[in-house]
Image 1: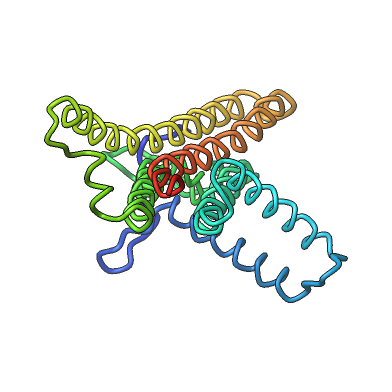
Image 2: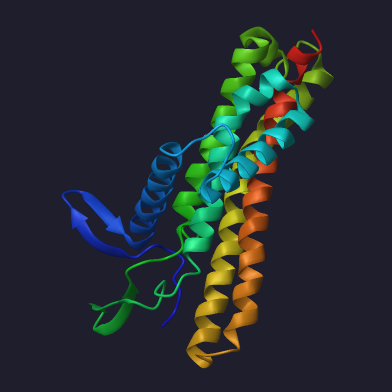
Length: 246
């Protein structure tokens, strides 16, 4: 059993290939949707439900963090996206640590050889997923920037009649593309490496020895969710900073 760089196709619906990471994405989304529905039905002014208490702690912590780096007005705008990034990424990362991931699957014939294809695989071990998250992050950052400072001030950040400022602006444009690569490959690399490590250790030692590595991946899963959230937040704060000075 080995971990491949690409997500494996389980079946196909018309022209749409359904991969094991897509199944895990649907599972993570469904889990979060059910959780939100259950919590919303039992909301009380004074929290009694443990689920509501946990939810409020997470929401308040994220909002306070955003407000601490910007201001209340921008925090209210950024919060839905920033919180979604953190909650989805950490849920997807932890789902990939559950028993059955990368171990339950089917054997298929590829090139005359039997190849094991897991039915479920960690979402963020698929570069397509992390690249999509990075594109949404950078895209929404520029959307917030334009809607906050205006299209003219936004373009002035990158284009100027001053040769020096123009050169700096062109470097800024290049930096925007490197943000996409940085966000996507950082998340993908850490989760993929952890997945490969767990698969290798588990194939050699089924009990006890994999436990320290699982605890390490729990920490890594949390840290990577925080890093992605904080980098996106910092990018948003920087590109909307001019409006705060007026």
